[in-house]
Length: 148
Image 1 (spheres, helix red, strand yellow):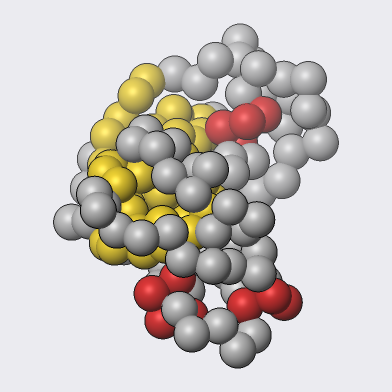
Image 2 (cartoon, one colour):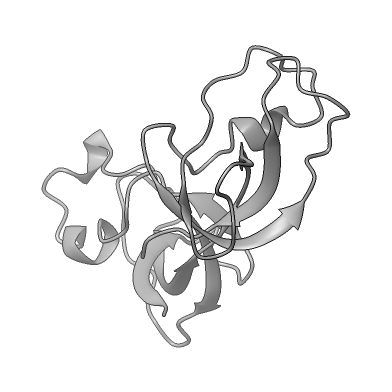
């Protein structure tokens, strides 16, 4: 299900993805706060459509103003522990990994997911891109659902 929100007019294109970071200092006192600050902090969203004939509104944070768009949460691709991992189950990330050169690092520490949260597995994608884990973790590459 999509949500209507406001984003910077320069970003207001279908297919644009962003991680919602929450309220900024410049948002204080803004009359559009309720339409703009209505997403979940830390969640990745994709713009599905731009509201046609909607005016561009002034914004202290976006020099080109903001536009009304429809967004949907984007599933996060992540490596999770293999044990008990199946589509529909809940899982958490294994924890930080210092091996930033590993081809799996972006999936072990994915943008838009937190280590202390549980997520529902929407799809099993298979083996991670690394040949073997430097931390001896048994991992599976999956898509995790984001809460709307």
